Image (cartoon, rainbow, N blue to C red; front, top):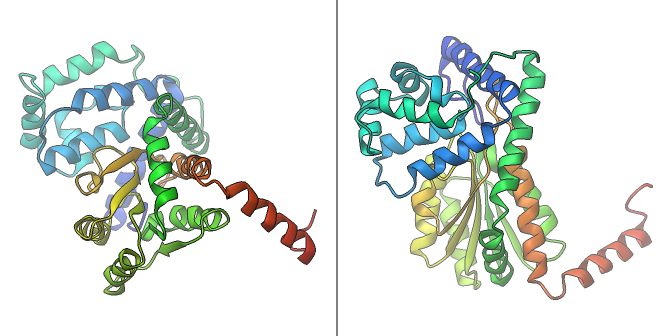
Length: 311
């Protein structure tokens, strides 16, 4: 099975494998509530290292499957990341370890002692929900330092117009943000279609005075999004991106990246944390829009006059 927001399978066999791997991640989430801490430790371990694109792919895979990571063999990790087994070994060496066994020993030393899957008391649907709860806990921990979100809010509030980009699996997050942002921001432009017109619309936003672009980038990451962000930065826009990982392919084309993990326990990824982070960004943006409250009150008054909503 393949498609936007799936777990990277190609064909029925690969789709079944992706689903099996996703279940393992879900079982790990149900068995170990410390998944959030493991992901945070992995992020910290990878920070500051100059990784190749292949190595970033491995790092991205390990963060997404944080609960499983300490227990994966190099062959299993290579298969999940879609790279060769020697690439996994070189990745471990790049992090300062003698090899992958040394990296795995380190991860086990700082990970919970219970092996993922030992509890296994939940069915696959409950496991997927539990994994998303853990993703939200991870997001809450990241928001303990609100400065990146506050900075993003200032950038988005000051950009007139404000282009919001999201293609394929990220279309819903971009559209949801744009829908609510239009209630408080005077000019929000949703960029949810690719093709040759995308760069034209970025150019139009720049000509109209835009200073920033907000992007939602979720797996599987379209090449078009990477190209669009590179183009936007070259055109002078400051790029703020909500992505599933600090090691996502869009990271090197982003000025301010805000990570929010996605769930991988079902056939198609779940994106509760990116959606919630989008609402947090809206709140931060509202704090930097002096007339936001007045605009909301005006909308409510007009909606009441028109009988727009049913109580």
